[in-house]
Image (cartoon, rainbow, N blue to C red; front, side):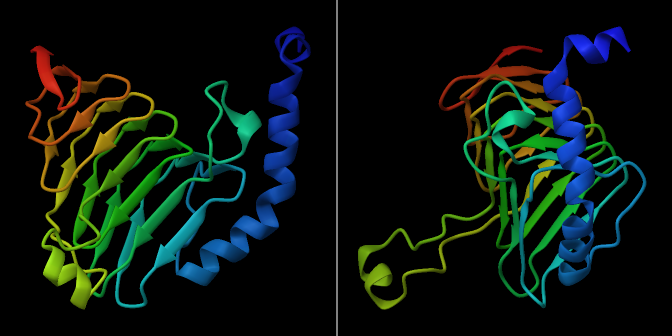
Length: 199
């Protein structure tokens, strides 16, 4: 009780979370998700799921979308998108993200006990063609390649995880890193582009 009194913002966050539950239930139903044990939403996320795409999420999900839900202050709601026919996002148990973005045109697979810091973006697509002539013909349709983030990965705040990478089990990605290549298991990687500084 004393701890609760010493952290009144946490009480406020929990009250907001409880009041939001009917809207969260409706949102999950609308995109074809069935709520599971331990799901907690602090603010409304955004789900953009193509009718021929797939979103699967395990138990004990925690998404923080409102500004008061984390001292690092999410700058926007969590957004999870499977935006193309056949695209898929698969997230394991005990996943948490603050104000981040996950966008799959092909496939993003995230393991269990993965924590993603505030305002990080994970995207398996370039969104737009790299060739100027192609962009004139079609504004979307950039290259895509699957992303895999294995169990027990911690990704720091404001990182960018780009297409075609695998982040190995138990790795840590430092704040504001840009991951363009595979990261071996149990490594610490930092920088842009991210390089392994400890393994």
